[in-house]
Amino acid sequence: MTKDDCKKLVTEIIADIAPDEDMTNLKPDVRLRDQLQLDSMDFLDIVMELRKRHGIEVPEADYIQLASLDSCAEYLTPKFNAIEGKR
Amino acid sequence: MARQNSLARCLDRVWDHLHHFMKQSRIVITGLGLTAPNGNTLAEYRQNLLTGVSGVELIEVRYMGAQPAGVCHFDPLKHQKKKDVRIGTRAGSISIYCAREALADSGLSWDGFDKSRAGIYLGITEHGNVETENEIYNVSLFKHDTKFWSHHHNPRTVANNPAGEVSLNLGITGPAYTLGAACAAGNLGLIHAAQMLRLGEVDVAFAGGVSESIGTFGIFAAFKSQGALASHPDPTKASRPFDRKRNGIVVSEGGCIYTMERLEDAVARGAKIYGEIGGYCVNSDATDYVLPNAVRQAECIRRAIAHAGLTPGDIDIVNTHATATPQGDIQECQAIREVFTGCAGVNVNNTKSFIGHAMGAAGALELAGNLPSFNDLTVHPTINVDDLDPQCELPGLVLNQPRLAKRVDAILNNSFGMLGINSALVIVRHRA
Image (cartoon, rainbow over all chains, first blue to last red; front, side):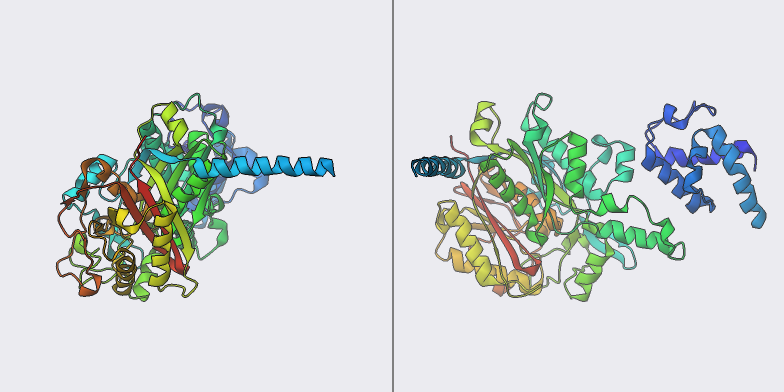
């Protein structure tokens, strides 16, 4: 999986978590919270959906890694690839 | 000693004033919002009640397959964002829709209204079963690992959820809570609101009842195990109170919320008035978990009528609670027969025959279906009675076709529930 693939999957999850938001022009290097109406409960939902849909665990200490799409891709892509490697 | 006497006199005066205030405050209904299986506005709902249109259809119930149920088809996005629908509950969406529609209907000037002086009082039969079943089903897909259990579970399942979601949506900072009273709950919402308005706790109340019960298989399964779940090849004929072939309850969702105010406030702002709270009674059977008690029901009805300062002969419409269970309908008919013997003018009907049993919403929705009778003097019928059970035969029963009444000045609304809770509410025509 590439980082762009990872960003696409994360964007799909966010679109479901925040269905009223316009996702078309998300800037990957800007904090998601600064572009979208997301609160701490929404980030818990993102963590839950990563767990449910992709079997990925994000420990609480690492929540900060989900700040932007770029940081998500940086942090999650190896996890996606590790899981794919196990399959 | 002199100081004590002075204090006592002062307290007496306060008590007299309070007592006078509580007795004299007349409470009126000034707005109404509803969603029923056969209508999302009062006009649509009433039209369908007068033309025999049922709202019962077949739905897939988890683990049970197709079952007849009353489903509402309002648009939650009319008053909510998609995210709020996702996070909240179906009962919350129903409540918000009804409250917003009631507010618009009331003509209250909301922007300038002190939101701390508004209260929300919603009757519920149950709340939380739907969300709990959904989460259990969800974790069952993950080997029952509870780390897949949603953090939304608690705010979704707290008993005050439906009222709380309305407070969030409308920015109401006054009291907002639900009243758990089984299937008597819809009436309880209005009764409690009248009491709070009389106490001066709030200036406007959003009151009624809600139900999301078609989302929980547990309610269907429990009625089935009890031998009290309706079945019929044609779902629109499944809910058939008083008919010899009735075989149980059609579970429904729905909601109905009224805006209620003290009469002087409503008159001062030139509000339209649907009707006035005449009287009410809530009592308990104290005899059984499930089985109704006709003696206590009759007592409840008599006390409500007396509380309104009326006699049984003054009641023009009796809207029955009858849910189409074999025994329950007979018990209620016994109670009505006992109270209304010799009252030639009374009309008796049933709304569940159209919409099924909307549980916590039932009392409030069924009242709404009858309020327009003050204006058109027409009593909606009880449908699906092909073969009247002789044990349910009552003088004045309005069967299958609407009836023009000579007079509609007082409506009695019955709602009874499990654990033996009974509620009877009398609404009277408003006269200045």
